[in-house]
Image (cartoon, rainbow, N blue to C red):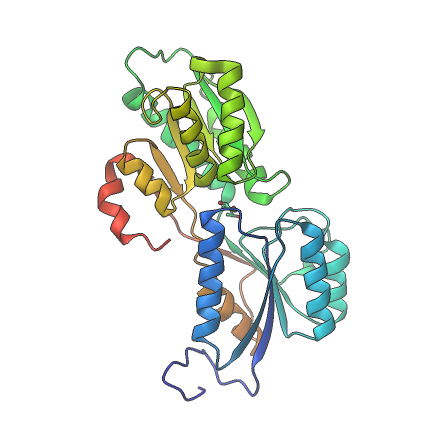
Length: 315
Ligand code: GYE
């Protein structure tokens, strides 16, 4: 091992591993925590890594440019979090031709040629959608406003970034569970782009169109739900009481909202992918075989546990 007090490298490397990482942007608290996790890990392993970090500001074309520039610079490994699933084949073929292995961090890609990436680490987004729906069908009766009926529960959905793996999968997993509960109806569904501003804006439109018909908000991420909470309050309703809210990520802001009684449940999706990403890169450089899929383990946190859990949260 490289000798230094801070060295956190797994192996001794002859020269520093150069990793190019293309981040999506800074759309949410989740994303900010993910960026911090990656940068903090790079800092810990600075004796054996050089990280080239590039922010795509939400645009696939910027990610493609960044990947091309990593190839041109001859990096040892490329990692990225693909903003959408489709459209990666050409640039990943270029990386393959250059002999540079590609790690998918957080989100999946949809490509024909499976040899274009070595490993995909991140959450099971379909399962997160299922967990959100399961929490809802199992708890709605208990948490709903007394005068609300169980015969028809009207849900509005704040979809994530259109075409992204988490939006596609959270949409699908949620419906997979709800199809067995015909009284739970999806009244409206629209993209809030995983942002607070988007959540607020889309919720305002939902409220305008459907008003107090809305019983539940399903947010594909916490930030969009937090934006919706603002819109609900401005419309004179009580979030968490008049309208039940479940969302995904389990970021600090969601716990704070739960402590205030404004959000009912958050389904965990961990952004702390830095350590395993650098581990995988080191293993690859050692010629070790690494798993194709590394799934993050995560939980579900209802409002009742928020106060107790909040101080232990790392993002
Ligand atoms: O849920 C959302 C973020 O890809 C899992 O992206 C990630 C999602 C996360 O903007 O908050």
